[in-house]
Amino acid sequence: MAIFDQKTAAKKDTGPFASDLPPFRDPPPAADPTPGPTLASAPRAQGLPAKESLIAADLTIEGKIEGAGNVRIAGKFKGDVNVQGDLTIEPGAKLTGGVRAKRVIIAGELEGNIEGAQQVELQQGGVLTGDVKAGTMTVASGARMRGQADFGWEDKGAKSSESFSAS
Image (tube, rainbow, N blue to C red):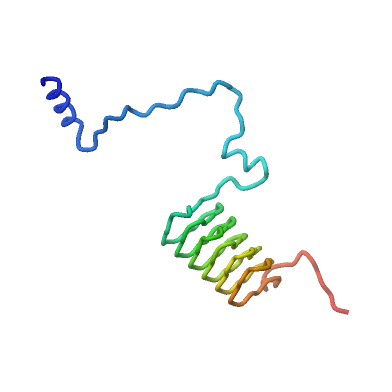
């Protein structure tokens, strides 16, 4: 009985968030000392950006996304997305809000406008309800869109790498 009282007293001294778990320790070093590809280095070796944020299929989030990396939405997001990288909306996912991204791939559903994208790809089964202003736009068979699409037009201040003349 005395041992039980000592353990109880020790727990009271550690505070309300005490745990019986052992302290965290770093894992032992790998048997092979030669470094292999890591998650962070693998995409760069292939020429792809290293950062990608994911909103998983079982999540529903409301807010605003801004940043330089890529974003992949597999769940539901309500709010504006403004990224310098790519935005991918997976099948079954839904984004409600405005989009500014370098490249936008829609396999799920987007309710909102896309502005300033270099490339928009509406894949089979993808649904877009909103207006698009992009450099190029690809629409696959089986995709649906309701809105206006302006693509292939140059901004007034931008210089073209190609010149066209009418004869």
